[in-house]
Image (tube, rainbow, N blue to C red):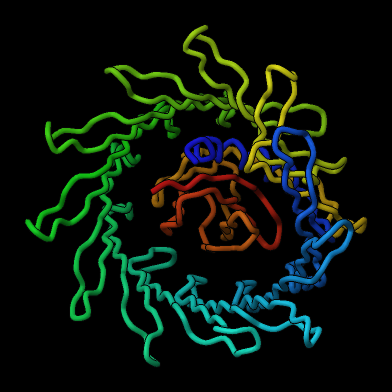
Length: 449
Protein backbone atom coordinates (compact mmCIF):
# COMPACT_ATOMS: atom_id res chain seq x y z
CA UNK A 1 0.00 0.00 0.00
CA UNK A 2 2.81 2.43 0.79
CA UNK A 3 4.31 1.76 -2.61
CA UNK A 4 1.04 2.49 -4.38
CA UNK A 5 0.63 5.76 -2.49
CA UNK A 6 4.16 6.72 -3.41
CA UNK A 7 3.52 6.28 -7.13
CA UNK A 8 0.01 7.66 -7.44
CA UNK A 9 1.18 11.12 -8.53
CA UNK A 10 3.35 9.85 -11.38
CA UNK A 11 0.68 7.47 -12.60
CA UNK A 12 -1.94 10.21 -12.67
CA UNK A 13 0.05 12.56 -14.87
CA UNK A 14 0.76 10.00 -17.57
CA UNK A 15 -2.74 8.48 -17.54
CA UNK A 16 -4.78 11.62 -17.98
CA UNK A 17 -2.78 13.83 -20.31
CA UNK A 18 -2.15 11.16 -22.92
CA UNK A 19 -5.82 10.95 -23.88
CA UNK A 20 -7.42 14.25 -22.97
CA UNK A 21 -7.61 15.89 -26.40
CA UNK A 22 -10.14 13.52 -28.01
CA UNK A 23 -13.35 11.77 -27.04
CA UNK A 24 -14.14 8.22 -28.12
CA UNK A 25 -17.03 6.04 -27.11
CA UNK A 26 -15.81 3.26 -24.84
CA UNK A 27 -17.47 0.06 -25.99
CA UNK A 28 -16.18 -2.48 -23.50
CA UNK A 29 -13.49 -3.28 -20.95
CA UNK A 30 -12.09 -6.63 -19.84
CA UNK A 31 -10.80 -7.34 -16.34
CA UNK A 32 -8.12 -10.04 -16.13
CA UNK A 33 -6.21 -11.56 -13.22
CA UNK A 34 -2.56 -12.49 -13.56
CA UNK A 35 -1.38 -16.07 -13.25
CA UNK A 36 1.20 -15.94 -10.46
CA UNK A 37 4.87 -16.26 -11.49
CA UNK A 38 3.99 -16.14 -15.19
CA UNK A 39 3.34 -13.45 -17.80
CA UNK A 40 -0.15 -14.83 -18.53
CA UNK A 41 -3.60 -13.53 -17.59
CA UNK A 42 -7.01 -15.16 -17.18
CA UNK A 43 -10.35 -13.50 -17.98
CA UNK A 44 -12.50 -12.75 -14.94
CA UNK A 45 -15.03 -10.05 -15.84
CA UNK A 46 -16.00 -7.88 -18.77
CA UNK A 47 -17.91 -4.62 -18.92
CA UNK A 48 -20.16 -3.41 -21.76
CA UNK A 49 -21.08 0.28 -22.10
CA UNK A 50 -24.63 -0.06 -23.41
CA UNK A 51 -25.75 3.58 -23.64
CA UNK A 52 -24.47 7.15 -23.43
CA UNK A 53 -26.18 10.54 -23.28
CA UNK A 54 -25.49 13.42 -25.67
CA UNK A 55 -22.49 14.53 -23.58
CA UNK A 56 -21.00 11.00 -23.80
CA UNK A 57 -21.66 10.28 -20.15
CA UNK A 58 -22.38 6.58 -19.50
CA UNK A 59 -26.02 5.72 -18.87
CA UNK A 60 -25.97 1.91 -18.72
CA UNK A 61 -23.00 -0.39 -18.04
CA UNK A 62 -23.40 -4.17 -17.93
CA UNK A 63 -20.90 -6.35 -16.10
CA UNK A 64 -20.47 -10.04 -16.86
CA UNK A 65 -18.27 -12.67 -15.27
CA UNK A 66 -16.71 -15.76 -16.78
CA UNK A 67 -17.97 -19.03 -15.33
CA UNK A 68 -15.89 -21.30 -17.60
CA UNK A 69 -13.83 -21.08 -20.78
CA UNK A 70 -15.56 -18.61 -23.09
CA UNK A 71 -18.80 -18.90 -21.13
CA UNK A 72 -20.03 -15.62 -19.66
CA UNK A 73 -23.02 -14.81 -17.47
CA UNK A 74 -24.69 -11.53 -16.57
CA UNK A 75 -23.69 -10.28 -13.14
CA UNK A 76 -24.24 -6.56 -12.41
CA UNK A 77 -25.75 -3.55 -14.19
CA UNK A 78 -25.01 0.11 -13.40
CA UNK A 79 -27.50 2.81 -14.43
CA UNK A 80 -26.63 6.52 -14.18
CA UNK A 81 -28.86 9.61 -14.09
CA UNK A 82 -27.61 13.20 -14.42
CA UNK A 83 -29.02 16.65 -13.73
CA UNK A 84 -29.32 19.37 -16.37
CA UNK A 85 -26.08 20.80 -14.97
CA UNK A 86 -24.30 17.49 -15.61
CA UNK A 87 -24.10 16.32 -11.98
CA UNK A 88 -24.61 12.64 -11.16
CA UNK A 89 -27.95 12.41 -9.33
CA UNK A 90 -28.56 8.66 -9.16
CA UNK A 91 -26.61 5.42 -9.52
CA UNK A 92 -28.57 2.16 -9.43
CA UNK A 93 -26.82 -1.21 -9.17
CA UNK A 94 -28.81 -4.25 -10.29
CA UNK A 95 -28.03 -7.97 -10.14
CA UNK A 96 -28.99 -10.54 -12.78
CA UNK A 97 -31.69 -12.91 -11.56
CA UNK A 98 -31.60 -16.22 -13.39
CA UNK A 99 -35.09 -17.30 -12.34
CA UNK A 100 -36.76 -14.31 -13.98
CA UNK A 101 -33.99 -13.63 -16.51
CA UNK A 102 -34.09 -9.96 -15.61
CA UNK A 103 -32.10 -7.27 -13.80
CA UNK A 104 -33.16 -6.73 -10.18
CA UNK A 105 -32.12 -3.55 -8.26
CA UNK A 106 -29.99 -4.35 -5.20
CA UNK A 107 -28.37 -1.01 -4.36
CA UNK A 108 -28.88 2.66 -5.08
CA UNK A 109 -27.19 5.98 -4.44
CA UNK A 110 -28.88 9.36 -4.73
CA UNK A 111 -27.06 12.70 -4.83
CA UNK A 112 -28.36 16.26 -4.38
CA UNK A 113 -26.67 19.63 -4.98
CA UNK A 114 -27.15 23.28 -4.12
CA UNK A 115 -27.30 26.16 -6.61
CA UNK A 116 -23.49 26.48 -6.57
CA UNK A 117 -23.02 22.86 -7.62
CA UNK A 118 -21.90 21.70 -4.16
CA UNK A 119 -23.07 18.21 -3.24
CA UNK A 120 -25.28 18.62 -0.16
CA UNK A 121 -26.63 15.09 0.18
CA UNK A 122 -25.74 11.48 -0.56
CA UNK A 123 -28.04 8.62 0.37
CA UNK A 124 -27.74 4.84 -0.04
CA UNK A 125 -30.41 2.17 -0.26
CA UNK A 126 -29.71 -1.59 -0.22
CA UNK A 127 -31.92 -4.63 -0.77
CA UNK A 128 -31.79 -7.08 2.13
CA UNK A 129 -32.65 -10.00 -0.20
CA UNK A 130 -32.69 -10.59 -3.92
CA UNK A 131 -36.00 -9.36 -5.30
CA UNK A 132 -36.84 -7.24 -2.28
CA UNK A 133 -37.04 -3.44 -2.81
CA UNK A 134 -33.95 -1.54 -1.59
CA UNK A 135 -34.42 0.21 1.77
CA UNK A 136 -32.64 3.11 3.49
CA UNK A 137 -29.22 2.30 4.99
CA UNK A 138 -26.90 5.33 5.20
CA UNK A 139 -26.78 9.00 4.28
CA UNK A 140 -24.38 11.93 4.36
CA UNK A 141 -25.36 15.61 4.59
CA UNK A 142 -22.93 18.41 3.68
CA UNK A 143 -22.88 22.07 4.76
CA UNK A 144 -20.93 24.90 3.07
CA UNK A 145 -20.26 28.51 3.99
CA UNK A 146 -19.64 29.45 0.37
CA UNK A 147 -18.98 27.87 -3.04
CA UNK A 148 -16.75 24.87 -2.39
CA UNK A 149 -16.04 25.83 1.24
CA UNK A 150 -17.22 22.77 3.16
CA UNK A 151 -17.77 23.20 6.90
CA UNK A 152 -19.73 20.10 8.01
CA UNK A 153 -20.42 16.50 7.04
CA UNK A 154 -23.04 14.56 8.98
CA UNK A 155 -23.14 10.75 8.67
CA UNK A 156 -26.32 8.90 9.70
CA UNK A 157 -27.69 5.34 9.65
CA UNK A 158 -31.28 4.20 9.17
CA UNK A 159 -32.48 2.41 12.33
CA UNK A 160 -36.02 1.64 13.47
CA UNK A 161 -37.58 3.71 10.68
CA UNK A 162 -35.58 6.83 11.52
CA UNK A 163 -32.21 8.43 10.74
CA UNK A 164 -29.78 8.15 13.66
CA UNK A 165 -26.60 10.19 14.11
CA UNK A 166 -23.32 8.27 13.83
CA UNK A 167 -20.49 10.76 13.27
CA UNK A 168 -19.71 14.19 11.91
CA UNK A 169 -16.75 16.22 10.68
CA UNK A 170 -16.31 19.96 11.16
CA UNK A 171 -13.85 22.22 9.29
CA UNK A 172 -12.53 25.66 10.19
CA UNK A 173 -10.57 28.14 8.05
CA UNK A 174 -8.30 31.15 8.57
CA UNK A 175 -8.81 34.66 7.20
CA UNK A 176 -7.18 33.62 3.91
CA UNK A 177 -9.60 30.75 3.40
CA UNK A 178 -7.02 28.06 4.20
CA UNK A 179 -8.02 25.01 6.23
CA UNK A 180 -7.02 25.28 9.90
CA UNK A 181 -8.63 22.20 11.44
CA UNK A 182 -10.78 19.16 10.75
CA UNK A 183 -12.62 17.79 13.79
CA UNK A 184 -14.20 14.32 13.87
CA UNK A 185 -16.90 13.60 16.44
CA UNK A 186 -19.04 10.56 17.25
CA UNK A 187 -22.59 10.48 18.59
CA UNK A 188 -22.96 8.70 21.98
CA UNK A 189 -26.74 8.66 21.90
CA UNK A 190 -27.17 11.98 23.63
CA UNK A 191 -24.39 14.36 22.57
CA UNK A 192 -21.43 14.74 20.23
CA UNK A 193 -18.10 13.54 21.60
CA UNK A 194 -14.69 14.58 20.25
CA UNK A 195 -12.77 11.70 18.64
CA UNK A 196 -10.01 12.88 16.30
CA UNK A 197 -8.74 16.05 14.70
CA UNK A 198 -6.25 17.33 12.16
CA UNK A 199 -4.53 20.70 12.31
CA UNK A 200 -2.75 22.56 9.50
CA UNK A 201 0.24 24.88 9.78
CA UNK A 202 1.37 27.20 6.98
CA UNK A 203 4.46 29.06 5.88
CA UNK A 204 3.76 32.01 3.55
CA UNK A 205 0.45 30.47 2.52
CA UNK A 206 1.91 27.02 1.78
CA UNK A 207 1.10 24.11 4.08
CA UNK A 208 4.13 23.18 6.18
CA UNK A 209 2.69 20.50 8.50
CA UNK A 210 -0.45 18.49 9.19
CA UNK A 211 -0.84 17.09 12.71
CA UNK A 212 -3.26 14.33 13.74
CA UNK A 213 -4.50 13.91 17.31
CA UNK A 214 -6.97 11.68 19.16
CA UNK A 215 -9.12 12.67 22.13
CA UNK A 216 -8.41 10.87 25.42
CA UNK A 217 -11.70 10.65 27.31
CA UNK A 218 -9.97 9.62 30.55
CA UNK A 219 -7.98 12.86 30.73
CA UNK A 220 -10.18 15.03 28.48
CA UNK A 221 -7.05 16.00 26.54
CA UNK A 222 -5.88 15.75 22.96
CA UNK A 223 -3.02 13.30 22.36
CA UNK A 224 -0.54 13.66 19.52
CA UNK A 225 -0.42 10.69 17.14
CA UNK A 226 1.03 11.54 13.75
CA UNK A 227 2.48 14.49 11.90
CA UNK A 228 3.55 15.05 8.30
CA UNK A 229 5.84 17.99 7.55
CA UNK A 230 6.26 19.41 4.04
CA UNK A 231 9.39 21.18 2.86
CA UNK A 232 9.47 23.31 -0.26
CA UNK A 233 12.09 23.45 -2.96
CA UNK A 234 12.09 27.20 -3.51
CA UNK A 235 8.80 27.25 -5.42
CA UNK A 236 5.21 26.22 -4.77
CA UNK A 237 6.20 22.54 -5.09
CA UNK A 238 7.22 20.30 -2.19
CA UNK A 239 10.62 18.71 -2.31
CA UNK A 240 9.96 16.29 0.52
CA UNK A 241 7.47 15.19 3.14
CA UNK A 242 8.45 13.66 6.49
CA UNK A 243 6.07 11.46 8.49
CA UNK A 244 6.54 11.29 12.27
CA UNK A 245 4.73 9.61 15.17
CA UNK A 246 4.45 10.80 18.76
CA UNK A 247 6.54 9.02 21.40
CA UNK A 248 4.86 9.19 24.84
CA UNK A 249 8.05 8.14 26.58
CA UNK A 250 10.24 10.92 25.19
CA UNK A 251 7.34 13.33 24.71
CA UNK A 252 8.61 14.12 21.25
CA UNK A 253 8.16 13.34 17.56
CA UNK A 254 9.99 10.35 16.09
CA UNK A 255 10.77 10.01 12.38
CA UNK A 256 9.07 7.16 10.50
CA UNK A 257 9.50 7.73 6.79
CA UNK A 258 10.00 10.45 4.21
CA UNK A 259 9.28 10.95 0.56
CA UNK A 260 11.65 12.90 -1.70
CA UNK A 261 10.32 14.35 -4.96
CA UNK A 262 12.40 15.51 -7.93
CA UNK A 263 10.81 17.63 -10.65
CA UNK A 264 11.53 18.32 -14.28
CA UNK A 265 12.17 21.95 -15.35
CA UNK A 266 8.51 22.14 -16.45
CA UNK A 267 7.29 21.17 -12.97
CA UNK A 268 6.27 17.55 -13.64
CA UNK A 269 7.34 14.87 -11.19
CA UNK A 270 10.45 13.10 -12.43
CA UNK A 271 11.33 10.78 -9.55
CA UNK A 272 10.03 9.88 -6.10
CA UNK A 273 12.07 8.20 -3.40
CA UNK A 274 10.73 6.55 -0.24
CA UNK A 275 12.98 6.23 2.80
CA UNK A 276 12.48 4.80 6.30
CA UNK A 277 14.10 6.08 9.49
CA UNK A 278 16.23 3.48 11.23
CA UNK A 279 19.18 3.71 13.64
CA UNK A 280 19.13 7.52 13.49
CA UNK A 281 19.48 7.71 9.71
CA UNK A 282 17.36 7.64 6.56
CA UNK A 283 17.55 4.37 4.62
CA UNK A 284 16.51 4.00 1.01
CA UNK A 285 13.58 1.67 0.35
CA UNK A 286 12.17 2.23 -3.14
CA UNK A 287 12.21 4.90 -5.83
CA UNK A 288 9.96 5.37 -8.84
CA UNK A 289 10.39 6.87 -12.28
CA UNK A 290 8.25 7.09 -15.40
CA UNK A 291 9.56 5.65 -18.65
CA UNK A 292 8.08 6.29 -22.10
CA UNK A 293 8.59 3.32 -24.42
CA UNK A 294 6.88 3.48 -27.84
CA UNK A 295 3.13 3.24 -27.10
CA UNK A 296 3.58 2.46 -23.39
CA UNK A 297 4.13 4.34 -20.17
CA UNK A 298 5.95 2.30 -17.53
CA UNK A 299 6.00 3.37 -13.90
CA UNK A 300 9.07 1.49 -12.71
CA UNK A 301 10.22 1.16 -9.13
CA UNK A 302 13.68 0.23 -7.98
CA UNK A 303 14.43 -1.45 -4.66
CA UNK A 304 17.52 -0.51 -2.67
CA UNK A 305 20.06 -3.31 -2.31
CA UNK A 306 21.92 -2.86 0.98
CA UNK A 307 24.60 -5.36 0.00
CA UNK A 308 25.63 -3.67 -3.24
CA UNK A 309 24.46 -0.20 -2.15
CA UNK A 310 22.69 0.16 -5.50
CA UNK A 311 19.18 0.39 -6.88
CA UNK A 312 17.83 -2.72 -8.61
CA UNK A 313 14.65 -3.37 -10.58
CA UNK A 314 11.67 -4.16 -8.35
CA UNK A 315 8.15 -3.58 -9.76
CA UNK A 316 6.41 -2.16 -12.83
CA UNK A 317 3.00 -0.67 -13.56
CA UNK A 318 2.25 -0.31 -17.27
CA UNK A 319 -0.15 1.74 -19.38
CA UNK A 320 -0.46 1.26 -23.14
CA UNK A 321 -2.14 3.61 -25.60
CA UNK A 322 -3.48 3.43 -29.15
CA UNK A 323 -2.43 5.59 -32.09
CA UNK A 324 -4.62 8.52 -30.97
CA UNK A 325 -3.33 8.44 -27.41
CA UNK A 326 -6.22 6.69 -25.65
CA UNK A 327 -5.55 4.10 -22.98
CA UNK A 328 -6.11 0.54 -24.15
CA UNK A 329 -4.34 -1.47 -21.41
CA UNK A 330 -3.74 -0.80 -17.72
CA UNK A 331 -1.59 -3.54 -16.28
CA UNK A 332 -1.03 -3.79 -12.54
CA UNK A 333 2.10 -4.36 -10.51
CA UNK A 334 4.49 -7.02 -11.76
CA UNK A 335 7.80 -8.05 -10.20
CA UNK A 336 11.13 -8.30 -11.97
CA UNK A 337 12.73 -11.76 -12.11
CA UNK A 338 16.52 -11.58 -12.27
CA UNK A 339 16.64 -15.29 -12.98
CA UNK A 340 14.37 -15.10 -16.06
CA UNK A 341 15.13 -11.47 -16.95
CA UNK A 342 11.44 -10.66 -17.37
CA UNK A 343 8.41 -9.26 -15.54
CA UNK A 344 6.22 -11.80 -13.71
CA UNK A 345 2.79 -11.52 -12.14
CA UNK A 346 2.31 -11.43 -8.39
CA UNK A 347 -0.72 -12.45 -6.32
CA UNK A 348 -2.34 -9.03 -6.78
CA UNK A 349 -1.50 -8.41 -10.45
CA UNK A 350 -4.56 -7.25 -12.42
CA UNK A 351 -5.15 -6.00 -15.94
CA UNK A 352 -7.82 -3.90 -17.63
CA UNK A 353 -8.17 -3.88 -21.43
CA UNK A 354 -10.23 -1.09 -23.03
CA UNK A 355 -11.95 -1.17 -26.44
CA UNK A 356 -13.12 2.04 -28.09
CA UNK A 357 -15.57 2.71 -30.90
CA UNK A 358 -14.25 3.92 -34.24
CA UNK A 359 -16.41 7.05 -34.29
CA UNK A 360 -14.42 10.00 -33.03
CA UNK A 361 -16.75 12.51 -31.42
CA UNK A 362 -14.29 15.35 -30.98
CA UNK A 363 -11.21 15.73 -33.17
CA UNK A 364 -10.07 19.14 -32.00
CA UNK A 365 -6.41 20.02 -31.70
CA UNK A 366 -4.62 18.93 -28.49
CA UNK A 367 -5.54 20.81 -25.33
CA UNK A 368 -3.44 23.98 -24.94
CA UNK A 369 -1.07 24.15 -22.01
CA UNK A 370 -1.40 27.40 -20.08
CA UNK A 371 1.44 28.94 -18.11
CA UNK A 372 0.15 27.96 -14.67
CA UNK A 373 1.81 27.56 -11.28
CA UNK A 374 0.11 24.76 -9.33
CA UNK A 375 1.22 23.36 -5.97
CA UNK A 376 1.25 19.63 -6.64
CA UNK A 377 0.52 17.83 -4.34
CA UNK A 378 -2.23 20.34 -3.54
CA UNK A 379 -4.02 21.30 -0.33
CA UNK A 380 -7.37 23.11 -0.45
CA UNK A 381 -7.04 26.89 -0.42
CA UNK A 382 -3.55 27.23 -1.86
CA UNK A 383 -3.01 29.87 -4.52
CA UNK A 384 -2.92 28.96 -8.22
CA UNK A 385 -1.73 31.43 -10.83
CA UNK A 386 -2.39 31.12 -14.57
CA UNK A 387 -0.83 34.01 -16.47
CA UNK A 388 -2.41 33.15 -19.84
CA UNK A 389 -6.06 32.99 -18.76
CA UNK A 390 -8.29 35.46 -20.63
CA UNK A 391 -8.67 38.77 -18.79
CA UNK A 392 -12.27 39.23 -19.86
CA UNK A 393 -15.23 37.22 -18.61
CA UNK A 394 -15.22 34.22 -16.32
CA UNK A 395 -14.11 30.62 -16.64
CA UNK A 396 -15.30 27.34 -15.14
CA UNK A 397 -13.00 25.14 -13.07
CA UNK A 398 -13.98 21.47 -12.70
CA UNK A 399 -12.49 18.62 -10.69
CA UNK A 400 -12.90 15.07 -12.01
CA UNK A 401 -12.21 11.99 -9.89
CA UNK A 402 -10.58 8.71 -10.92
CA UNK A 403 -13.79 7.25 -12.39
CA UNK A 404 -14.64 10.30 -14.46
CA UNK A 405 -17.18 11.95 -12.15
CA UNK A 406 -17.22 15.75 -11.81
CA UNK A 407 -16.97 16.21 -8.04
CA UNK A 408 -16.63 20.00 -7.96
CA UNK A 409 -17.29 23.07 -10.08
CA UNK A 410 -16.53 26.74 -9.42
CA UNK A 411 -16.65 29.98 -11.39
CA UNK A 412 -13.63 32.32 -11.40
CA UNK A 413 -12.84 35.68 -12.99
CA UNK A 414 -10.09 35.93 -15.57
CA UNK A 415 -6.79 37.64 -14.91
CA UNK A 416 -6.62 36.81 -11.20
CA UNK A 417 -5.12 34.17 -8.95
CA UNK A 418 -7.57 31.60 -7.60
CA UNK A 419 -7.86 28.66 -5.21
CA UNK A 420 -9.56 25.27 -5.26
CA UNK A 421 -11.61 25.49 -2.11
CA UNK A 422 -13.21 22.15 -1.22
CA UNK A 423 -11.56 19.61 1.03
CA UNK A 424 -11.58 16.48 -1.14
CA UNK A 425 -10.60 12.97 -0.08
CA UNK A 426 -6.90 12.22 -0.42
CA UNK A 427 -6.13 11.04 -3.94
CA UNK A 428 -5.70 12.18 -7.50
CA UNK A 429 -8.01 14.28 -9.65
CA UNK A 430 -8.04 16.13 -12.93
CA UNK A 431 -8.67 19.87 -12.99
CA UNK A 432 -10.27 21.23 -16.19
CA UNK A 433 -10.52 24.93 -17.06
CA UNK A 434 -13.15 25.92 -19.62
CA UNK A 435 -14.59 29.15 -20.99
CA UNK A 436 -17.73 29.33 -23.13
CA UNK A 437 -17.54 25.60 -23.78
CA UNK A 438 -13.90 25.72 -24.91
CA UNK A 439 -11.38 23.59 -23.01
CA UNK A 440 -8.43 25.81 -22.06
CA UNK A 441 -6.36 23.63 -19.77
CA UNK A 442 -6.12 20.16 -18.22
CA UNK A 443 -4.11 19.77 -15.02
CA UNK A 444 -3.63 16.59 -12.96
CA UNK A 445 -3.60 17.24 -9.22
CA UNK A 446 -2.95 15.12 -6.16
CA UNK A 447 -4.88 16.27 -3.08
CA UNK A 448 -3.44 15.69 0.37
CA UNK A 449 -4.97 16.48 3.80
